Image 1 (cartoon, rainbow, N blue to C red):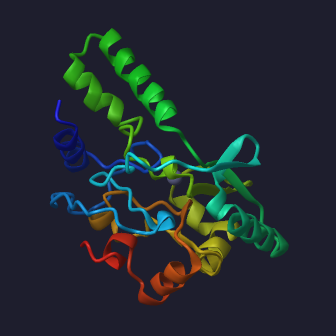
Image 2 (cartoon, rainbow, N blue to C red; image 1 turned 180 degrees about the vertical axis):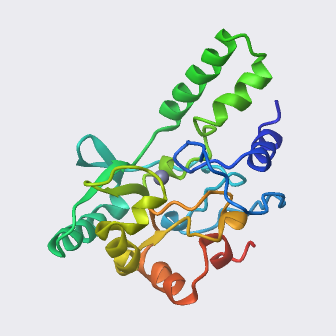
Length: 227
Ligand SMILES: [Zn+2]
């Protein structure tokens, strides 16, 4: 199967989350938009990954352990810890629930799910589509960069829109920019990012870019000028 066609078809057919889950309630967005492919000539911390721009083949995460078995790229390690410390000092309880994920891990998870559906009697083609509704297609998850983290409030660990009402998330959404992180999938931008609103997914892009994005109100694809 042509993987590009598959990914584009998938994005039109359903709404996936960057974390590989399907949102049970589809947002009211126009998903019928063209695939945008850019040349990856960006600084390392600014690499664009979305359903149409897979992780570059030569990208290698330089990993360091953060907490509870979660790893991130060294490039964002200090900024992440500073942000989490400041968030805690403000009285909040941030908890990392996802960070770096390797291509092999993503592939293993994906193939396991495909085989599970084949075991249920589906054709391979249908099994691949059904699997991708649950586990992101390998190569298209921003988590593979090691520059994205999912952070929840320890008192509400549900990955849904209720996160935006937690004190931890309110603080992060207001202050992440000062530490070089962006709220990668803001509300009302799903038709551009291809990903549903995720008020828990933060991506490191460097403080110069994050502050410029905060001031502009643009999502990352818009900021990079590929919309
Ligand atoms: Zn995520």
